[in-house]
Image 1 (cartoon, rainbow, N blue to C red):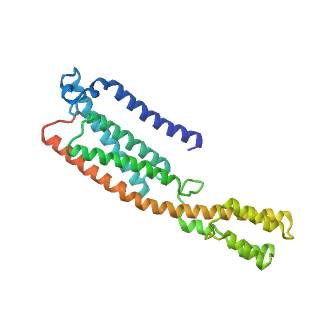
Image 2 (image 1 turned 180 degrees about the vertical axis):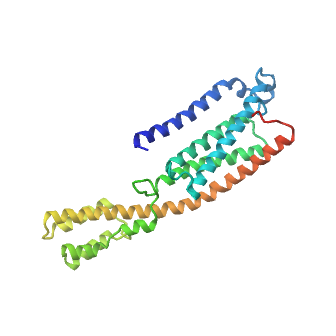
Image 3 (image 1 turned 120 degrees about the vertical axis):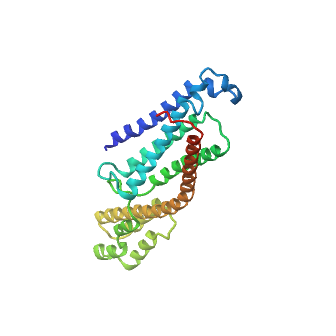
Length: 275
């Protein structure tokens, strides 16, 4: 998927979500804005109520969208389902789309009436959606290959070079100069990259080196600093993902259990599906 097509893909999902939310809110505004005790007298109460054709239909469709979004993403991530046809990044975006629009439909299905076990399901669903948005932000920070695949820590570390050895073998720099540069490039050094490069430029400028060699060393230093930054970011994002799963997964499981209970009780009480 090209960059332009990807933007259209994401924009379409955003517009669909906004359009559906606006349409449902606009068509049902006179009903949803009434106090609960007055809704029974609304001329379209039988349509908008949670057990009505419209209300129940939204619940069914919303639940199906969430289930489909979760199934597709887990199947792709763990079992490489459809791996030949769609990148994980794009499927994650579709997962977020389904698991955002689905809860919106369920929100209108409840007619904004929360109580008992339904309120637990709703707030669990809200926590899942919000944590999902946070998870997407964390996912975006993970370094990737040009094809969009996540880079592993070992792959990033394999890209690093022994800077001191290269400076000695290729440029024949003095030992004291190599020590200065190595200490400067050390990951334990908290100085920012721009300051390191500026200081390195001054150090090299005082040495009897050809201009082309100075440019090459600076170029190598930039790549090494960028790589170190990517390694640090990956390690940080991996730690955050561990904490993120602690929030996202339990709420998702709670929501799933309550939805199953809700549907079972509804069917047991004699309510029939509209489809």
